[in-house]
Length: 376
Image 1 (tube, one colour):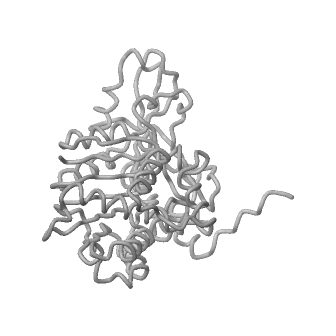
Image 2: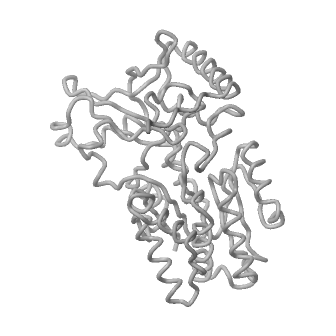
Image 3: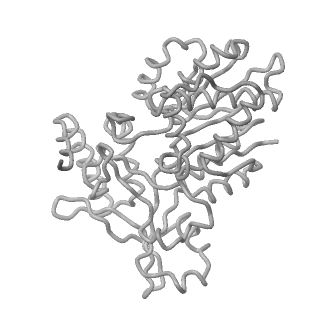
């Protein structure tokens, strides 16, 4: 059998992509011929009403799968762990309100799984819990409200993170923050910032000068490493993701921040196998050959630099509780639930398949990291 045919682009999607392309071209012309890649990525993913995340589908029918789309087990594990954490922090003591803040909730499926488990297993907590979805997009709020209609009295929305005591959670959010890319020029002993220009009516990469926070990041790379770094080596960082995490830390009065995402730790930042960076584009579960083509239709993403996210949280006063693979984290939580006589049962064949997707190294188990930081 041959490879499956690549689906054609629907007329509405094509029109949406053409409109985003026009807007980006206008901005490039207005700014003198180029924009940083981070700006291109921001508009391609988040342009109001048009960007990728204003229309993206998740799961087998979409462009990518997540731990949430594997089934309800993920949300149930998190709900059980939340109860343990709230109890340990003293947030279940009356009259305290246990708070769960979710950022990047997409269509609300995780919240439904989470609140569904609480209602069935811990109704005493379910009646009191405050579930806050941080969502600036009116489009995505509409999706979430429809999914969570039966929990309407328990869910609140906010544009930004308020001051809170409890747990903030995000899954595959930090990898979608606009990304800065820099390319090493060994002969010239300098870094070039990856920009986007227009040539022959196509978006193409170009060189731009590094400046500001990007220049400060690059100046922190040791000279001994630069001496052996091959020309063309790409380094990536996301100042927006780091700033967002630090901002969330400052909003946390008591409790923890928790993120699940694919990424790497500090020791792997300059691994030879990453000489071209980690930026990828996906469409219909297939890698995109050109990450600059069809803006608004392609999921643009890159590995999270957990070393820098961890440092951002610690600089904001948090203590790192753990940074490990998703397999190790979820396995530990499941073992604790069994030891406490609170196993997530029944483990039907369907639920076992969900567990394998969440924990197996060939799925989410090894590539994904879990960072938990706490304000003591």
